[in-house]
Image (cartoon, rainbow, N blue to C red):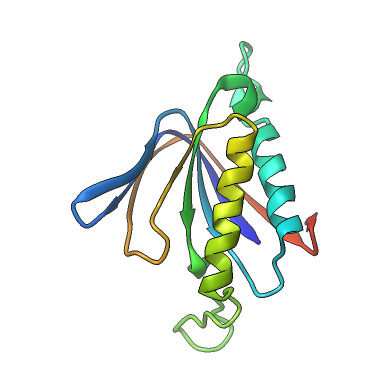
Length: 151
């Protein structure tokens, strides 16, 4: 599983003319799955997300997590994170996970983060989404697992 994590002042997702998810201070997480992803991958990433120390403390150092700050998380599925441009200029998405499995893994990620007491808002799986954000920092990280372990 691959995540792009952005610290934000605010973020929202619009589908058509309706806002389907929005947060204030917290993390915008773009999540992509591949064929070998399991529940172990999801759980490892969820636990890392809530404890990730990317928020400033009183001295301006990144020492605080979502759990420390009461921050929120906006989770947006994005199969294009597994796009490959090795051959030609048109991306291939053969490494992206099966949508039926991916939706279950994304839902599990949201539930696991929520179980830690963090408010989670979601995009809409499979929809054409407009994502708006006000990046904070900017701070952007890539988290990835293979066989249930962070890489």
